[in-house]
Amino acid sequence: MRELYSNLAFSPTVPLDGVSKLQIAKLGIAFTAIAIILPFLLYIYYDYLAFISLGPGGTPPTFAGFLRVEVLSFFALRNPYTAAEAPERLKGQPGYLDSLEKRFPPRPHTRGIAPHRQITQKASKDNFERLASAIKRMGASNPNLLIGTSCFEKHGTGLFSISPAKRTCKGEICHAHPSDGSLHLTLHPADARTVLEAGWGERHPIARGGWFERFVPGGFIMCYAPRDEREVETVLRIVRAAAWFVSGGDGVVDIKVDRRDSGYCSATDASEEVSASASNH
Image 1 (cartoon, rainbow, N blue to C red):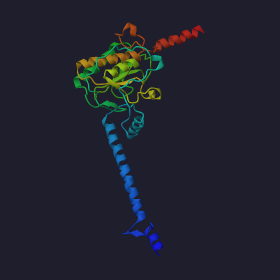
Image 2 (image 1 turned 180 degrees about the vertical axis):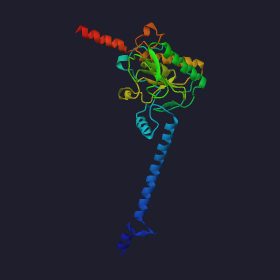
Image 3 (image 1 turned 90 degrees about the vertical axis):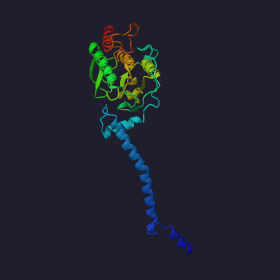
């Protein structure tokens, strides 16, 4: 009799104050699921709002675009302030920049992948106009360069090489972000190291090289927004270094004689080499 009472007491179908133990178990599972899923949904919701708040960029401001960026975030660099190892073909080769004065700290806060934006220490309207106008003059006055719509951003203005040695995104050298005054540009590994060590920028979160070059080049750097006229001049030096590298040494007028070779041959040089090789055989 005692054994029968015990079996009944623990049966999931026997009511316990009007609620069976099976129902209690289901309620427990439901509350546990809510406790796990709700914070996750809230995280996704607020992360999506943060993505939208960065403004227009290369990724469509849609939920599908947001999910693409979320996947890429798993591969983001842990430390964007350290330089990447130079490819074998560029190891030991000098860049365009001899040196850079240290940028007055601290570094600004940045956020995102595509778009990747500077959140603090944004450029004033006047300083951004100085920078943007100088870049446009650079493109208009140099026969090797031109101004067009940014290939990476799909919005805003970009500086391009007419005959790029590295045909990444149609030979784009740099583009500036009107929303914060920062820039993205592609640098020689030696120049990227100089910029990072002097505190003037950081690597793009997925500037890993290799397979990730389908998104951005391995030397893709965010250059921080200039805070005064003197910093505008420093940023322009970095832009000229990018023009020199992407153009294979012919991207800027004031190029130094001993720094013509950026590590890539130009498109013209490459075709001449192919023709010479064919004639020799």
